[in-house]
Length: 577
Image (cartoon, rainbow, N blue to C red; front, side, top):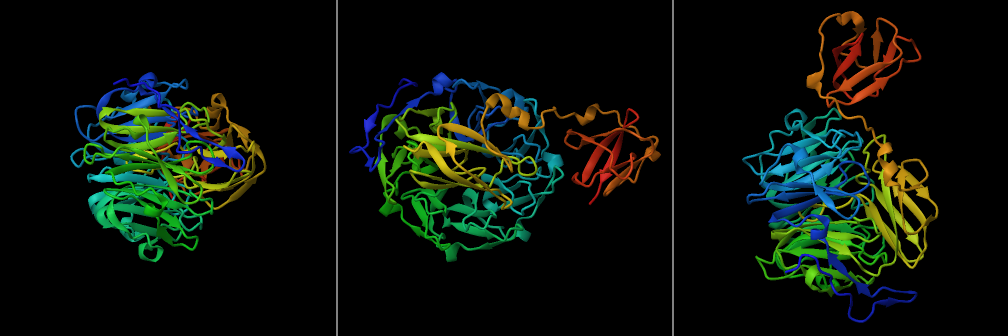
């Protein structure tokens, strides 16, 4: 079988024509061999994240069993990838989940890998120089040795730092709150989300539009659970009240506003019929899988909302485990009236036992592509070749907190539609899609208005933007056309320093005081600036306070252990709060 073939461009039933536009041809092309990813392994999950901050999504693939290790592929920015798995320095053949997230708020995405019970999970810190350091023990997540089925990250308590939630199979779930000092504290019981069951999927999103992040969980043979957040990482179970407590053999879950009403809807894959829970706009949901035409009968795992033809209305893509139940993958075309039409074709259908699936415009041509982790078959990349409408993409950055704006909500109004989307750090099953917002505009040549609700609730409004451009929006600044060559300049770029190379002296401790310090640090001799290194190896330069040339204000630094350079000698400094 040829690994590079074109899905014949075909007409979806009759041409789907709307009053002022017509999008009738949806076509994809298998490009994994051309892209340099054609190994046939027991692939399981797929996680897209830009680990080197060059503006292009890179790919991490997990393997749950077999002889092959996990793989990391760097995007070469030309439609191809290079295998750079060796830079992780910590590999496994038994990983069920993973997530890219910036745990230390330095703008660079780190990687948590959920391994099997014997190996335990691993947290790899991004060193900003295309290397990673294992910080599992020092971060306080070294004790996790459970069968984790899915992981997600969000700022759950509103402090501007990303927290971790793990959905564990047969054991208590776990919630790790970020201490803002490179460590986490396990807080699942005090937060009220200590569920135990046959866990599968987790998606974190703002279901009630109150600007905090809620948690939706799927289970295998047990009712689904929706936890409502009070904004301080204190949760209550609202599954019954919201009518999301459906029982099924649930696997993956994804969210989207499928009808432009300003509320997120939920899709869940299942053994037997899948579920589509549409928001009623009153904090309740109705199950409409059958009436919408998306109650696929396969052994569903991954699922993604994706606007494949850029008409402003998201389609649904489902990956099925063909070897378990002989049902192929399926793409459902959004008909704009809360119903969908089933699309079928060889490559889209992909009868190769898919598990994880993720979405990214990896070649940056303005059309979203599909990544599929198949078991015992090649990893697939379906490049979108559809005759699609216009589009706009938006990359959000907040250098002050939650750098990549996980949890942000963007509302866009155009001639074609009203749209809303939220940024989640993980979705589907064993998957993570691009963190760049993508909006189809149909025939519209501009977005009339854009409203961004940042994760902390701040609102930023933007006027017209021209179509067919990717925009970089830094919080409280005007949007600029995204330039990959200049993107890296937005981030702290100095490589992290290995603390083992520091020659730390214990002498002359009276050169500065107090130690530990809570606010102001006094230096015995005048210096023009202080050089401080935090516990992760990040260099920080601090200038004197206005009060005195020998007084330095350290109140903006998180608590923890630091190393201070005085008279060309490194000294330990402890900041308390």
